[in-house]
Image 1 (cartoon, one colour):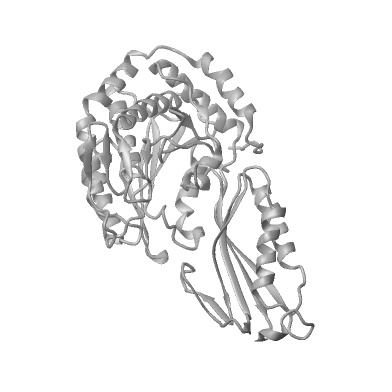
Image 2: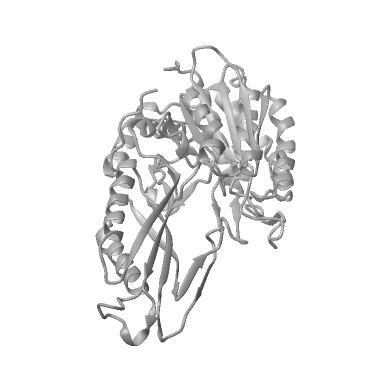
Length: 442
């Protein structure tokens, strides 16, 4: 499918969404009423499944734990008529990816549903168990991100099955096993997801719903994620000679100037660039995982080495390339007594806002009208991070944030709003049913 060129995220997005949504408004059909009631009737069943999954640790590096969550899900999907494909990822030291496929009516749209099996919480983390805080709130590792999203998928599919609308739907479900820390190289670890995107007519991402000022938001865009590193090497010597022609200015002053230039010269809409770690001294180095640094020196020694590491996030490939060109030019500026190098690790691509993505949100707002829910505005992409849907967004119209509303993600305070699971499942069931009846463009 040809994807239109992305545009800057702006008020035009909201105008587009709200102008189309009223035209799609319709009361729920008899099948849709069955889906709505089924989600409510089976809520306890799905909450129990969420509890079982959360109580099974599946930190990204806990390969056996990820596989155990896989084993919980296979019978759930196969009971709905899906076939299972497990894609081992031994070559990138990850557990693998779980794909399910449901074949429906030929010539109709193929939907790709995206979620993930892993969490950020490894077995040695103290946060391990599911806990019910009250009737509307549960707590636990991955309860929202993204085991709550998986439960939302199953609740929606089971509702479709009960209403008879799943039978004709062409659906592929892709649950990655390493979303929180993707295996490298990405050309291997994301190859099957990218291929699934090329097969699909629409991609629906079941990571968390964002609620802003009490309103549910739709995500038609997500920014990229990449890591950069600046390394400065300079002459060392006695501090009494610093700034002289012979001794130079050391490594730390030039690094500070480079970072200051980044802050002043790089800003543009929807771009952020964080400095996550700095080390410098007579010697400085990063650990093999780039998450720790060592430095040594004395006040009377001119520092010979300095390193800074950070990330960069942008909304379009053009913004990424433009920013990288500026960063390289800044790092290449001469200074007294040394040199600097720049490295960039391109990880998650951007999911730029496109007319196709906006049209999906408009269709979701048609569902909202049928459900008697308020229309969802497009979320500012600055308010969420990168995700797996970005790997397919260049090839297929995509919509993110169809999972439940949660808070404290990636911390020991992660909770999920239970009613949002059922609200999102109803939205997803109706949206998938309506999309599945449309003619495929493939």
